[in-house]
Image (cartoon, rainbow over all chains, first blue to last red; front, top):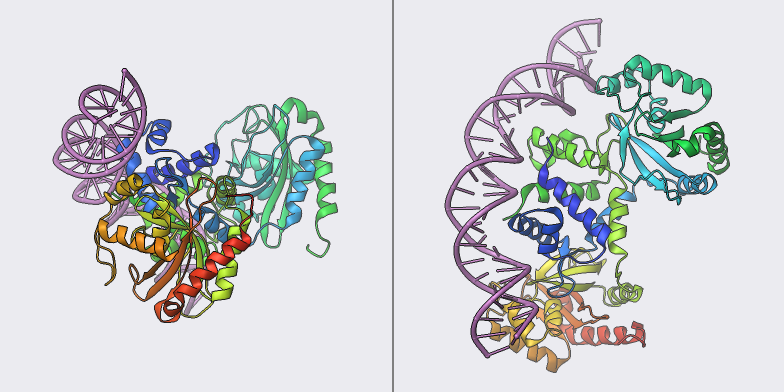
Length: 246
Length: 246
DNA sequence: GGAAAATGTACATATACGTGAATTTATCTG
DNA sequence: CAGATAAATTCACGTATATGTACATTTTCC
């Protein structure tokens, strides 16, 4: 079950992150198609908790810096080492595609850092973006770091859906693809999950954290170059990863 | 009406900001005394939206960097000029008390930047902290920047409560105190709102934004020094505020 | 290795909560 | 400055939703 008002809080914040300016109750209500009264209650709750204020009289609400203060506290724990951002920045620059660091979240894989391609046609992903762990290059690069038992436990929770023609729709299909990836030296996906999307990924264990790095873009552009891109990822990781850390 | 599940989202995030480590469903449920099933729904919602993930298998949930990315986007609009943070940092260092930048939010005043005292007994305030605009030094320093009509409009919404012995409990009392503050050159409060708390504040208009700066601490310590502290605030603002900006 | 304890998930039901209509307050316009 | 219009706020009701209970799964401990 999805908790509606919890989701609404996130939507409001995303709204402010997009518009980047104060908004009145009416504007917010109209934007989402919410009743004024419900919007009123939500805004009152967020204000009362100190997360919204009114920068100038009658100009509407805007989030307080409290969000930032809280997010900083939360994210300064185990931050990603700085070189991982350099990694995806370099990869994106050299390939012209979108590069990301990915972490596991149950049966999904979450993008925890992203550098987007600047190409007009590109893979649009943001931090927090989620994809099925078994049907994506980045996800499978995570699964490669699991023990067989751990993989089993994940498999049992997966609902296998035919997202695209090549989506693995059984445990055996996933395991086969993992074996192929091992042999190949990297993970790949050709529209396994998203139409027209291809990508290459490799595992990126950091400390005891299981991450992966992926470069993805439109199939027509990146498809033929997947092996080179994979080699580039590996080389770039070698170059940037501090030697002392395993 | 307070929207429970909206508030719960904030509570969860604050919880993570405090503990700074992943937490399992059970831990979160127990901590808040929420039913497991409800907690499950909330966590599922936050996860589905890409705001929580599971850094390592079976180790529980933790917020994704998406919070940080969103908060950054939101807060990089009209950020406070850097010298305002220097201002409260200097004030806190020199006085040993807590110094803050405050903004209006209806009948309340919100702390939008805070440098805390390091004294064991101190005014504990965080960004997002809210106090009544009419019953605090910082709030009245905001009201001084309003037109009489705007003040009236605020007054009509205030519920006058006797927070302490000196709380102004009528519009006239507030207006009188504002006139005194004008004459005095700064705003002050002696336990008008919080027991044992005294403070000095002055208006701090920046561009078209109405802010104030306040230094506050325990009455026994800061009380006798309020005039000096007020003078220090004024001097420090003069020193730090760029001359070009009015 | 097997039983017990803890954790995670599903579902029906009663109730807290979101909503539409009404009221009040603010803003615009001639 | 009034009258009109729009926005903000309140409130009582009916329904969407949080919860208690039951079941499944995983982990711990002996």
